[in-house]
Amino acid sequence: MKRLSILLFLVLLGTGMCFAQEAEAAIPDTENSAIPEEEITVPEDVSQDTSQDTSQDESQDSYIEDEEFIYKMNQKGDQFIKIGLMVNIPLHPAANKLKIGGAGTLGYMRFLNSNLAVGGDASFSYMTTVGKNVFTCIPLMAKVMYQFTVNKLEIPITLGIGGAFQSYIGESYFGLIIKPEVGAFFRYSPDWSFGANVGWSLMPQWTKDSSYFGVIMDAGVTVRYHF
Image (tube, rainbow, N blue to C red):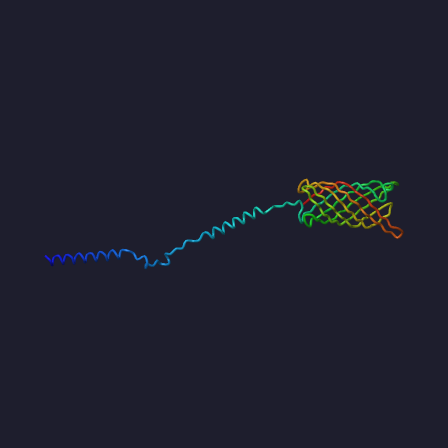
């Protein structure tokens, strides 16, 4: 009986030791177990990309807000052709020697920037004298113009210089002419403007016997075609 009890105790002891070894083998060694490098995934840092996208969007929005489209009535390279009809008023000699006459002009200007333009024109003018003789003048001038703009109102200030063919009682003379002008035009459309202008023709004459300085003012209306 005593031997049987010892044998049973040894069997139970061996069984318990086997069960403990199996349980210990089933528990994973979390401290020493190695995870393959291929299976290690590092979460992407999306905060940097998000901040970059946000900054780009903000810069684009600020660019759109800061951008201003400025429309200018005249810009570099713009041109116009003008046709004008004027009334000539003699200042020297006085009106008691020359009567009021008329004139017509055809001109062209090209803008170097939004305000400054250069070009030229050709005119024909006439006046009669108290003796019913006719004085004619054909000026050919190069011109420079500076134009102020207020909304649709354009105010050109022009200076012309050139030569003028003058004829009176069968005699002819070609001499210097200088003409300052000022005007005011309404820009009816991108293609057309209408206005009035005033100018002063300064025409010195030098001959062997004497010299003469003529001053003729003209005032009239002008139509300009812009392109």
